[in-house]
Length: 357
Ligand code: NAD
Image 1 (cartoon, helix red, strand yellow):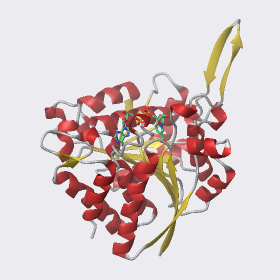
Image 2 (tube, helix red, strand yellow):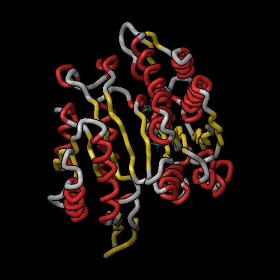
Image 3 (tube, protein in one colour):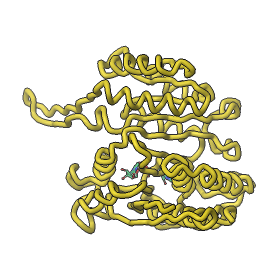
Image 4 (cartoon, protein in one colour):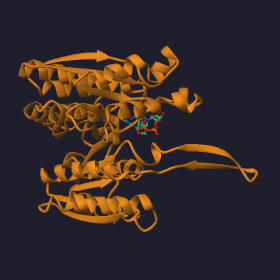
């Protein structure tokens, strides 16, 4: 069975971490008799340098014409001054929007081997963290109208936050369906005491919840959710929330689990095709030094196998390989602790490959 994967190595550490994920995918293909065809495209800063825009038309077409997209990360200080329409991040918004990827799935799991790397007190981290944050990805403030201009003699900026009922309904349905495959508990996060978009969010989520009587649904205000993630993260199974809140809470959830370098994500739409990427950025401070942790990207590739290609054995194999390497005490610098062996990015790739044979 052939699967076409569009690959965006991106900027900063992107090329280093994607290289390790591709090695893992290729080894998995050999082991299970699969065929993955990679088509590489430019997007982000590298595309600005080569083509003057962060998302060339040809690149976008290859995202629309494939079975899934694997991305490292884009951006960096070199492109901070470019016009906002062609900023590296604009490429990601453009791809997500064109592919209709409205659901961002961000698992946040505390690997028991990395408990010492969590900034939480041991008695809190010790209760375990294993949650799925489902973030709405192509609506809300990031996609509303942005404008800055003079009003009454001073500069005023506006960012419109807009949600239509159907946008809330489809992300809520995705979250409830995922919860059914986990512990059947959804916490819907909003700011319904202040925002109209949140009041509509709550109403629609409750309507969808009625279709899933086997899944519990509770509401939580976003400020409380931010507190609960550090006070008692073990309480969460699935969190569903809108774009801006999800952006912030998902970084918080990843941080309490240890290193941001471990965390994978999937962005999905109505079909099986998705875009898979680690949740971190291009880490310009460590780029080109073979220091980055490639595990978030490798686990993103595992999510691609599971969610887009329906290859659960292959996905399990990758996740077990990562677990085995962590069990053996191997770490990249970002999650190093006493008694462990420090590896470079490529050495971590070697170790994980060594577990897939
Ligand atoms: P970042 O996630 O790149 O880095 C934050 C910190 O985490 C840094 O100290 C970095 O060294 C460390 N880190 C991140 N990933 C790591 C890994 N795999 N292994 C080891 N350490 C890792 O966030 P930032 O510094 O705020 O952003 C840098 C650039 O990345 C910016 O241009 C930003 O716009 C961009 N960015 C891109 C994406 C994306 O492509 N999806 C997401 C977030 C930020």
